[in-house]
Amino acid sequence: MPEIERKFKVEALPEHLLGPGSAIQQGYLSVEPVEIRLRAQDGGHELTVKSLGGLRRVEVALPVAPEQFDELWPLATAFVEKTRHRVEVGDAIAELDVYGGKLAGLLVVEVEFVSEEQASRFVAPDWFGHEITEDSRFRNAALAQAEAVPE
Amino acid sequence: MPEIERKFKVEALPEHLLGPGSAIQQGYLSVEPVEIRLRAQDGGHELTVKSLGGLRRVEVALPVAPEQFDELWPLATAFVEKTRHRVEVGDAIAELDVYGGKLAGLLVVEVEFVSEEQASRFVAPDWFGHEITEDSRFRNAALAQAEAVPE
Image (cartoon, rainbow over all chains, first blue to last red; front, side):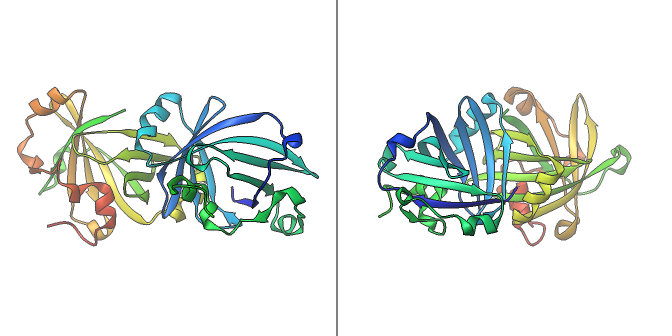
């Protein structure tokens, strides 16, 4: 299903809003021309194919058995680790990612919408910081290849 | 599971050995550093991840629903079409691929083995032609990008 989402770079963690976090490990088998990502989260494993792009893009997630994941993981060439928190924002659920490793200090919040109209109507709360939906440096595949948090 | 196989370029089709054929369409989402291939065959659809290499390599196949396949197919950038025939060769089953489209005229036979020892013991029948296991030009991902049959 195509995803419609907007993304913001958070400057200060809204501690009081955070629910429990979930650790995520991502490894990339391909970054271009399509993103092909392995992800381990909460004991589950998946391979996701994403087309490049900003607001609207193709995304297909396929479940992967643990032993298949272990075979595939060494083929990955770029990595991201982060902890994901779910946060209620009005009537939407946002996902706040707290990055680790070489990207420590980076906080990104993403909100998913059911339509492009709903996406454009959305008013971000102050703590969201500035919007980076169209900033390709903050795509996870780009972050996985970066040496540090983009300026 | 890692696959152990040997591959040969057939010069003349052994018509009398052929069982019924099965049409295969392959589209590549990635060619390097890993091969990521969509395949439609006999009404089934899958996405396969393969590491590069000759005799022994990682291969993981994931089933894909028809509607997911339709979403993913436009992301492919290189293509192969062929008809696959199963052929008994001694106590092994070989797969003979008859290529179509820009690769019409190319015939490749592949035999899979349970061990590297069995692979090295295998004596190919005359009609197999010369071995191309290590010839990277005949990898399907390379053929998908080629303009014509390699010399």
